Image 1 (cartoon, rainbow, N blue to C red):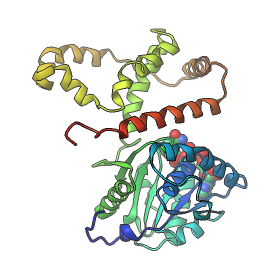
Image 2 (cartoon, rainbow, N blue to C red):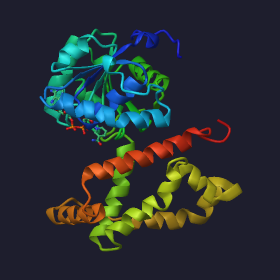
Image 3 (cartoon, rainbow, N blue to C red):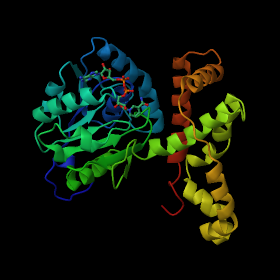
Amino acid sequence: MPTTPSKFRDLASVRTIAVIGAGAIGSGWATYFLAKGFDVVVADPSPDAEARSRAYVAHAWPDMLAIGYTEAGSVPEARLRYVRSPAEAAGTADFIQENAPENRELKHTLLAEIDAAAPPDVIIASSTSGILPSELQRACRHPGRLVVGHPFNPPSHIPLVEVVGGQQTDPAAVAWSVDFYRYIGKYPIVLRREMVAHLANRLQAALIREAIYCLDEGVASADDIDAAVRMGPGLRWAFMGWQMIFRLAGSEGGTAYALDHMAKEIDGWFDSLGDVRLTPEVQKKLVDAGEEIARGRPAGEWIEFRDRKVTALLRLLHEEPRYPGD
Ligand SMILES: NC(=O)c1ccc[n+]([C@@H]2O[C@H](COP(=O)([O-])OP(=O)(O)OC[C@H]3O[C@@H](n4cnc5c(N)ncnc54)[C@H](O)[C@@H]3O)[C@@H](O)[C@H]2O)c1
């Protein structure tokens, strides 16, 4: 456990976590924090949020056991509490994870309310998929403790968290958040400067844009465009990033050898990449492709399939060090 003194609450003293907003992301975080032994207080104004969220936690719990995130055989209900008021949850927490809808005005008001209620040594992390932390912290009285802690769906399962500070974020808050997420078993990465959509969604956007371009141009079927990733490079990406893959393309000569042979060609690939916009026509094609790929099965069935596969994959990845020599 990191022991560096910090103006923020001692990591080891964190007992209660406030989860603000209990949709897919908030419920996923609540499940994970519970699995890691914290008391969790969830705040959501919607009257059906508690029932939906409790159902999520119960459903995901067997995966938490299977992956090894917990040894508790059943959901520790006594450590999970639901309230309507974000301020009430924030006022009693040692760490706050905000997961309200991706709406700028709503988040501004909500974060100001949370910030006013939480003691100033408590870190507030927002799950926002793409809003800059500088923008989110504007309405806060203590902007220095606000970071983005961006997870991936489902956050109950997926380890990555992108940590991003804004112009007013104290570097110690970024350091604290990285230490905290790592301490609880997540895999935090840090952005050295904020960018719209952070890092991983930018990478996804680059790939998605080209996939949509190829779909729009009729280069291949919707199924084949998906298979081009999931049956190919996607299999390696779970355990090896593109930089290593590129290095291996050059065999013992490494990246330098690969570039010697390929740089000109690859520049040509870059030049030929498509530019596409989500016009109504393109959106219609995407909707049709989504239906074709779903094969008439409801979203719930696909979510179950996703979580089962992610669980199996994480079990496999946990069997060995992340990288040789680690
Ligand atoms: N869905 C994803 O794949 C994904 C992935 C990573 C991050 N995120 C981010 O996480 C956040 C939540 O996304 P989601 O998909 O769970 O959304 P969602 O719409 O499923 O859930 C949002 C929840 O917030 C509640 N809410 C509304 N107003 C609130 C308020 N004032 N205070 C507290 N709760 C309030 C709603 O009742 C709802 O239960 C967004 O910022 C989103 O960008 C989403």
